[in-house]
Image 1 (cartoon, helix red, strand yellow):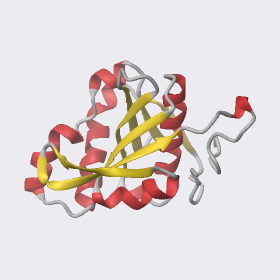
Image 2 (image 1 turned 180 degrees about the horizontal axis):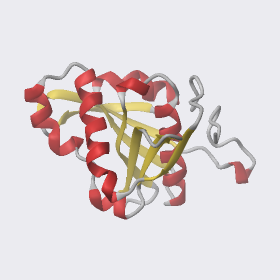
Image 3 (image 1 turned 45 degrees about the vertical axis):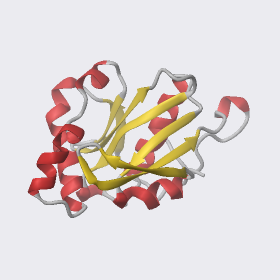
Image 4 (image 1 turned 90 degrees about the vertical axis):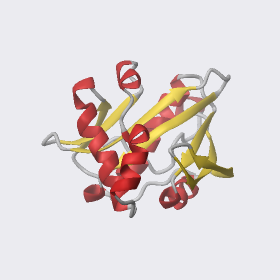
Length: 179
């Protein structure tokens, strides 16, 4: 079940803009550094840490911002072309705002976006540091795969079954709030 941690107040999640791409990519770099990766690893990982401009242009990247306009994190989802399956392209939260519910709210946004794309399963490739996060959200581990930009890093593969929407009489995302 998707459950909310401490509620992040005064936080808006909205579609990202192309002019925010560098700022969002730097959030990914800070989050990855916070996971203990050194400069050499960051250089190797950089293609995966840069936010995808075409996904922003397609309206598939959402940013969490404070009322003051500070970006706290972002999420990107992509269609796969396989009926009902979407891919969590990336989700990063600035370490300064971690453990405040930002990641959970961004994931709930990914669920809603996937649902709008007729998705019923989200495929997730998780860094070692995020395995517990996805497990708490109710994703099921289905295997591992080497990280394409650093084969020594094993990513955990998860599948998240998108629950029926509120319109169908059930709660779509347990504990999430639109604040």
